[in-house]
Length: 311
Ligand code: FO1
Image (cartoon, rainbow, N blue to C red):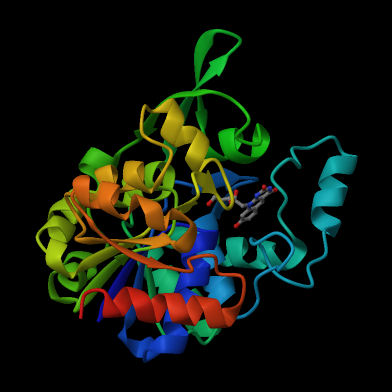
């Protein structure tokens, strides 16, 4: 088994390359649920859906989230009434949230529902939330000089992550339990990969579930991380800005310092090759390659390099 700790878009692209490099039945994606949000009475799991839709070949290529060939009639109607339409749910995507929410109301765990959804999309690999419990990421932002705590999607989409973040909290994480199979998978996987996702708001909430960080650290020799920062910048999202705001170096060296206790190797981009020794100084062996997944071929090549780094 190859376990992949995953956030959204970057992780989904990496996973798609991995499925081109190994037997999909060997892959388990362990996905962040800190981004999950309840809106209109619906339970939305953006990272799970981004991974699922990408691996199904159904992702919207323009946005990187949601479904391709989407229509927006429900949101347009909601907006017509003056309802909250800031978080855009496409008409087809709403079907996923209706199914998930209905099954949650029936008492089914999120991991079971995720397996049902992935089976319906005929995915060859396993996708699981890191936990079946609710662990919403809460973001304290600077609101005109005052601290204000908001939900993750309020920060990320509502405010376009264009605000100063003072602190982050994974609400309920201390009491959460890993989803069935997560700890066993981490204990027995031949490789653990930390996908190129935001270390602070995508991977940290995965590692925050009790037992997960220890399980990964116990397999440090089998764990490889892929840097989401390339030349000091995030390809998508606020990873670089958040790294600076939290006092970390906004480079592969800062990423290495965050992961050195759980992973042996950090895969960095060619443009960061000169930082190889600094990554080593931070406690990780650097492997240099093209990490910008601009085509399926690059994603597959990256996945092969990642696996070669520990085997
Ligand atoms: N991101 C946006 O920037 N705007 C949206 O309106 C939006 C809606 C949305 C609906 C469903 C879904 O699964 C994801 C959605 N996202 C949207 C993406 C999401 O907010 C973030 O990309 C992730 O949470 C960060 O990983």
